[in-house]
Length: 312
Image (cartoon, rainbow, N blue to C red; front, side):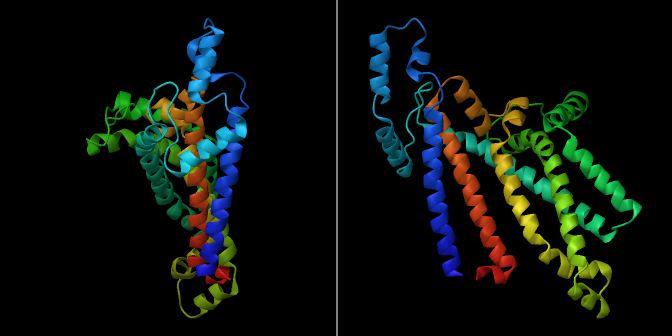
């Protein structure tokens, strides 16, 4: 197990290094000059050159990458061109919204998908399974931003049960949690539908194995064989989807955060792109990529826990 973890850690480190180089290169290749954008079209060339020197934009590209990478390793991602504040602090503040939102949406997706997937697998070939799978197909097809606006109309405007948007901060935990419920539900709907379909397919395949028939022959009911034996052996593809879903929920909530006016990481990236604040874009995207790689690493470890054969 130790060798397995060591290999995965080495792979994680190399992936982060390659990702940092690609992120820096792609962002730097974006047309336009941040200094000219900040000063406006009427700025004098001498003023633009002085600002470029102040921001370090006059250095060669490889040297700028090494300076940036060295700062990232020590926790210093530079200062925002627009807000004049440390990028690391801005990202940390926004993660206090995006991370709980992603976790809440994932918990809701699992809570909905697990019973639905098991129900559909236990009733495969029947009308109930057809109806459930049809409902999940609708859940996948519905755009989450449209569903988000529908939730606002029903629960915020008409029923006045939940806030329509904004985030009061974690100094008021109850109000903060209430402000995340609607966006979490909007994000969880398509993910729950996908997860339910994957779980149902994995369970149907597992229920056809010989050891399930042996368990039934020993006196276990269909439900007991499903929950005690089939579910654990069907978790490998489900864990893969869960890892991908969490990465998507963390990195892909830009539209939902804008619908609900949440000051999350996705909205920060959107604002930084429109303001040509490249240092913020680099830092935020690197954090998201690191989160995706870390989640993939944790999913690999969970594989080894679920199926000991994979440790070898």
